[in-house]
Image 1 (cartoon, rainbow, N blue to C red):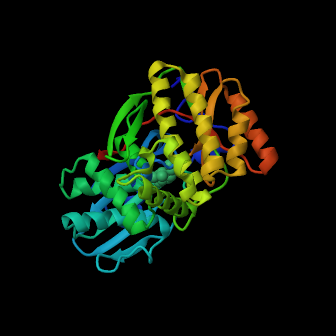
Image 2 (cartoon, rainbow, N blue to C red; image 1 turned 90 degrees about the vertical axis):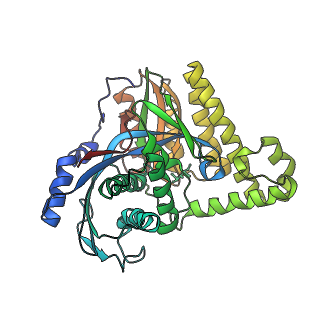
Length: 406
Ligand code: GLA
């Protein structure tokens, strides 16, 4: 990443956001103010961007993610009774429940993520003490930047520490993923938890979702990654995300009739889809086509990065977006506007929606000649069209989740 962009090269109203920047001391303060004692441990975790591999993860494909520098902090103490209390700086009221009574239905939405993680510790390791937990964050929520995986991983690290379990990060990633699937009820793949758990500064996380294995890939220097937010929030639960998940399963079931033993949609060849699309509903065939093509784009993207051909790598980001828009149908006019607009700038190498889609954020890979003025021109054009500002920043690739103090 080019060093001329600091942690957040902020524009306009992003400044208001920046002033809410909350660090380890303030989660400590929130904890003490809420629970009148010092926390036993503080852990933190970043948000993430999805670089490429849209909706390939739950189809057994490869996906590339990177941590951003915005982080969430969790302060936690175990209790000697059965009470569970959770507080978030952005939500106000303390959520209070007990070991016998907690459920995903009766608590504020945000509290289901840490409770789901605790539930996994309870199922798998017999965790049985109440706890107090405080959260502060500067990761925007509902914008495709995975604040949910951040709260899961930070909670998992904190519980791991206080329960003295010494679980490796890979176990915490799996446990957080199960918490989101089971307790929260979102059938997400492994991308978010893996990126947030395994991320390293200036490196991409390349995840083979079929095996859960990952490796790091150093991000070539001299290029920048910009995040442009739409003003459209998305929720994954009861959303088209679940619908797409089902459509992909339907494609896999149908294709197994003609290619028996196929375990993962992403492992098929584009010619398989072309040969057998008649056995699938046309919508389902389009979803399958996207997944299979996207898997090949991921491979090519990594090859281009390896060879240092950033322009070709960037074009694949834009091709990924086109496929998301036309075949997977998870884009929106706002996301398309940003991708099309950004691609008008000669120093933008490529752009695409990042994450689930249906709102959220766009990422752009740029040369170091793409300036703040350029980014502001994009945000101006967005505002003129949608009557709301697209907040943007040049992001560094940050570190993954970690224990801060105990
Ligand atoms: C969300 C999910 C991920 C992944 C992406 C789309 O971020 O949580 O598991 O499916 O959408 O690629």
